Every structure is written in C-alpha cells, then in structure tokens.
Image 1 (cartoon, one colour):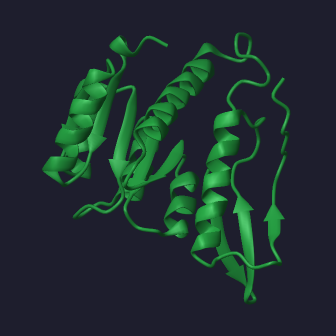
Image 2 (image 1 turned 90 degrees about the horizontal axis):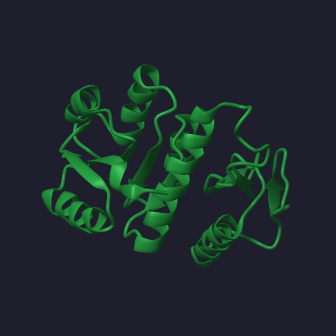
Length: 202
C-alpha cells in the first residue's frame, strides 16, 4: 500500500501526544493533520477529507465515541481507530458499535499502530472497490476482546468475528486474553461468544 497518498487526522487534546504521533507517522510516509478536540476534527474532515481518523477517547466536550457517531453520519465508511489510556472494556465495545475499526490501549505499541492503520485503509479500499472486485475472504481484522460479568459469571466476548483470522488478529487476541488474565478478569470458567467465525487463513 502506498502511504504517501494517504492522509491521517489525529485527534487528541494533549499537544505532546499530537506531536509524537505526527513525527512518527510522517516518517512512515503518511500525510498527517491534527485536531485538539472533536469539533475541530469535524471541521477539518469537511475541509481536508482524510483517509483515516485516529482519535483519543477522553477529551473535553465531545469524547471519541461521540465523535465516531458524528463521523459515520456525515462520512459513512470512513475508517476510524479509537485509542484510550483507560482500561475500560466497555469503551472498546462502544467504539465497535460506532463502527470503529480498532480500539488501541495507550501506551500504544508502534507496530500495532502501523498494522491497524494499514489494515483499516486496505479494508476501506476493498469496500470502495465494490463486491465484484473484492475477494470473498477480504478483510480479516476483528474487534477487541471484551470482558464482562453476567450473574457474577465472567464472559469473554469476541466481537465482530465475521471474517477469517490472520496471524495479526490471532496475536492481538492472545495479548488481550493474557492481559485480562493478569488483571484477574478470567476465571477457570469462561464463556466465549462467537458469531460467524472462521479461523481459515486460505
């Protein structure tokens, strides 16, 4: 994928975070614009039409999930990645309901960030190509693991498993399960909810 022609909009209320992401992603060949809050981001989307939005969750005024709601009304299908420093699995679920491509927990691993951006842009390109040009198994990224309790019984829900899992996705789930286990969220009895799952990589 040619990154030189791809424009990213990064939304965060912390100037040092914006500067860090801008420096890193510019070096990787992306065109980068920044916004300090959701309202500024919406204005910039209208003016600059970015290829992808990378937004923080916790911001004054409109938070990242609310921004996603507005984005997908005005710009349906625009790839968006939500990031957060809060260890809140409910936030991850909310992000996916608002069509976020991925949920990244701060501090973000640089390789995870680049991989998520690349896969989001590739999936969007396939969707834009139309059903005749897109392969049936195109797009293999899945949402985050969400932990919750129902009647005091822990349940691990694998969200949006509607595509085959590639190696990147499998590694992401392994990391998520390990983190939840370390945080004491997983007991010996686990219910795994999956829908239309295929682990084929062919």
